Length: 213
Image 1: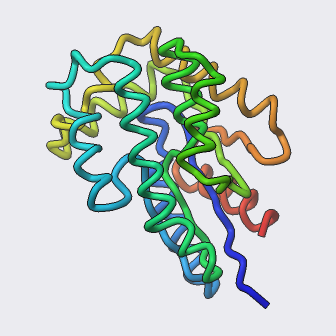
Image 2 (image 1 turned 135 degrees about the vertical axis):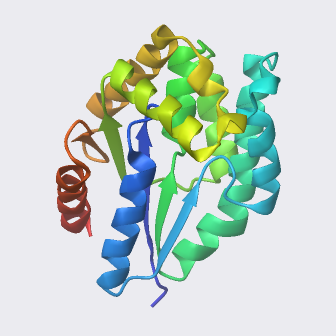
């Protein structure tokens, strides 16, 4: 019988803590004996890393919304074909920091691009590969942005801070987009309150994932 993996995506506004939580979850699943592939968008492949450098560079401030959308789609097409599909086919658990819901939230809800176009590009780039479970980490915008900007200063990652430079109103649109996605697809999307201590947030994450697995 062919192995079937499990695809988990982690979503939320910048600074919500999902990247930290993904690392903790990966450790938890590996301790339970699962093969885990922990990846991210953009930048989950060598080609994707080059696309990521363009997308997140503050120097790309003049990039148009359509160009932004197409670059994310190109990154995803390479990511799915090169990494995600092969990992799932051999039975691994794939943890992906952002996927198609991010495109709907950022380029759709926040940038105002046509949702039907976004959906068509997502179908093309994913080749029908969809998450089994999506965790949306929710946090007030002012808290999340403070965390994100502090992290960039601390880690020296200001070269990837283009989205953190957006106004709070932009990030609130993203947040509301994610909440809308969660309410429309409660079977797949589970909301996680990201305002607590990392240990408490991780407990909620593990409960959702262990139940799904």
